[in-house]
Image 1: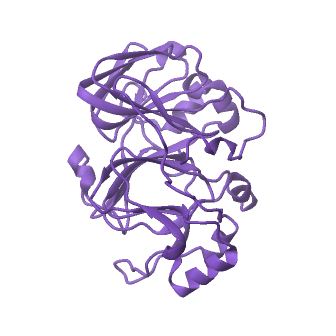
Image 2: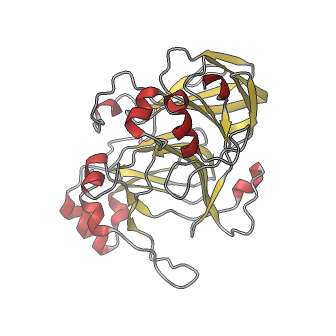
Length: 347
């Protein structure tokens, strides 16, 4: 069974949204006739939105179907024992031509109380940022629910929120409970828990093509919000060097590393009990593992099975990859939902 596996590539899933743009076409994606493709779901296990394999003899099967067949050999034994045939991460490219709604996601405990399997913790890697583009991440200072409610009802919620102008290459970790929003002119790669639960708090009173406002979730959001202040820069501190691997996010749900490189790199995977996912965020690259070479351009990913012993990375000129795994070394039987690990990554 192990010899039959190989690095998997996937067909893109396009999402038309009210705030979406058209920059994904710059990378060779064709989502005609969608007018506003704001989201490219690069890898998904969300029900009714499962990614379809694009290469090899498993082509045309969904990711979930492949996990059902290969189980821990594909995703890792501990990952399979916890998540079964559902892949634990959702990977997106987001192209914001207009501001996204101000929103928040619940944590695992609250989501499960409300009948959902899990909450949503996520991270952004900024791929493009127009001059003057802004994003929101948390509150400027510790805020009370009463202050928040008064500001929301009074139309001046922005006065309480921490906003900043990101640059390409910036990283933002968004734990469940943090109020946040991407602004127009930003394109980001997003790594998140497999969950499609979003509570919209404010949507600028805009309407769709039928003159309808999108649904808000004001009441649902109250119990989810972390009202503590950011206290400074919201981005992640890191220093990346060419041909080195740098951790840019680490939490119980995923570990993400950045690899900028201009020469072939070989990695030993023998001690990993997890899949390894490579997402191209700049340039042209290729992944070789298990005697299979898979090329990719920006916005494409390759899933290297957990049974792979090693992987080699190649590029044309220079490229940047995000390497995503799950650190299962200290997993217990119960899922974790703590934020103790945030301090070293959030400034």
